[in-house]
Length: 257
Image (cartoon, rainbow, N blue to C red):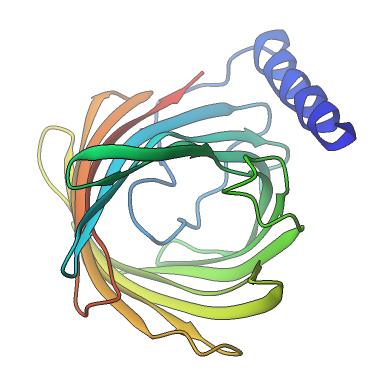
């Protein structure tokens, strides 16, 4: 209960900052964290708030038709300094289906994140990520522990319309009363098109470090469209490259206040 109260207080403060401060100049288009696996290097300007929401349907047919729907995949971002931002992340409600019928549903844990820009150049960038997930979800979805994630995200401009990006990420959580550690690398390419369109393709994997789990490999891709400089829409999907990896399709938005 104390954790829930603290998160609600922080959320209220973030919204007050967004309302109570003059809007900054928004000549440049919004740069969102979604929809790729890699969290981007870009940090928000001070007192800027971005709300990101999405829907995802993941599925994996290994003899049984199973799928998971997740909504609203919230990421509420607040720029604190020119190099530092804070995030409230919540995957939301997960509905698990077997053979097309909902078998159960649960609410995920809430996480607090931060991003710090270590290097900011015209041709390349490097940022540090830190996330703590708190046991606030449903009994069937929470790990009942505080779970950390840390990472280094990077990007490199290759030409006027093409850039490379990626992340080296480590995450830890409790499964079956045991602390599990995973390494999650990713690399991809982003493309800028005419009239507000963009696209990306990316490879990512999950490598268990201290468990008997299987390595997962997947390729995801997506398209983004700037409705305005402050409002972005996306559609995305992924294909698992082995039996343990899920496929998914999804869509979402990002809005800058």
